[in-house]
Length: 74
Image (cartoon, rainbow, N blue to C red; front, side, top):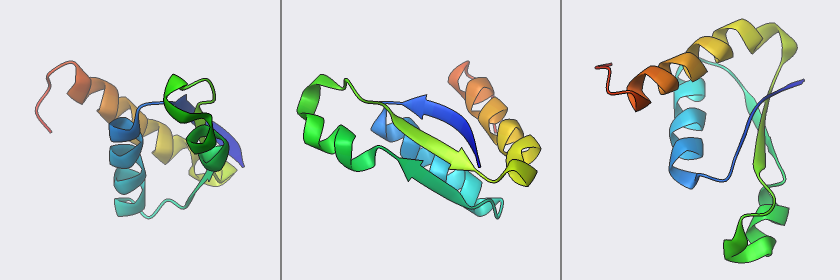
């Protein structure tokens, strides 16, 4: 497994996990419980992991997130 991204943004993570699932890419989120136990200071980002073979497709989904963040239409 490879680390696709780290983030403390729950909205972004929710969108990303849904988009990856829609593409049939299995994910594993590390540090979710440590991040929640940390409270509101967000010192521990959650890490989204994907299978090595899914990395190219997952990176394309991540690139789409970047485009959407800049105001591009889906």
